[in-house]
Length: 261
Image 1 (cartoon, rainbow, N blue to C red):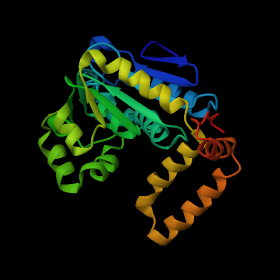
Image 2 (cartoon, rainbow, N blue to C red):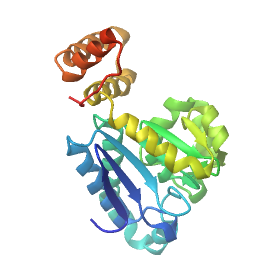
Image 3 (cartoon, rainbow, N blue to C red):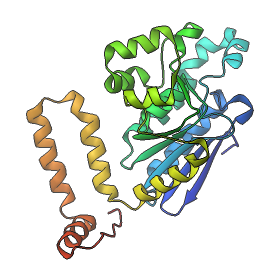
């Protein structure tokens, strides 16, 4: 893996760092490719029980590398579908891997950066974070799954407002809309994110995965089918170590020690 994306293991957790700080971690062909590799590695590794996605330098991700795109206008059209496939595979993995994914964001969170953050299950932001869908500002429509995730979080009208106008949201406004879960002071961001990551990595990973799948699939199912899916999912959790541990700990009035299986 090249240096545009770094992958670090912290016990049962993995940390993916977007690493083009001189370009505010903007997406170019190399970063798309490397993010594809990193997300595949953590998704397929059963030893990884929680994932953190963060950005190096002054921003989480300022969207696509617009200067790169403009410099390659003549060849970009025929190549973009291939380039974007890897990026979209990464987004899909973040959204669907059966383990919790936490985004830790600061500075610019724009365009493809907002799409990546929205694909994560939870997000913690520093007070200096600025959020913008931004695609209309360069004359294109959204990618990275934001046309799927954003309307489900903020509602259709607000999503269209953000898409059409390309205006920025500060961290408090993003939190009020449900775009992020928590806002903290900049100096506390990394510590609070690490604390939450450790908590998720120590949790009942199999149950988290089933819960994530149920919530992701609820939009496509009528209630009767969702109820059946809940029963099936609960049944899959019953034979696990963590269900036995969780129920045993409840009866014994002690904290559970989950193994993620």
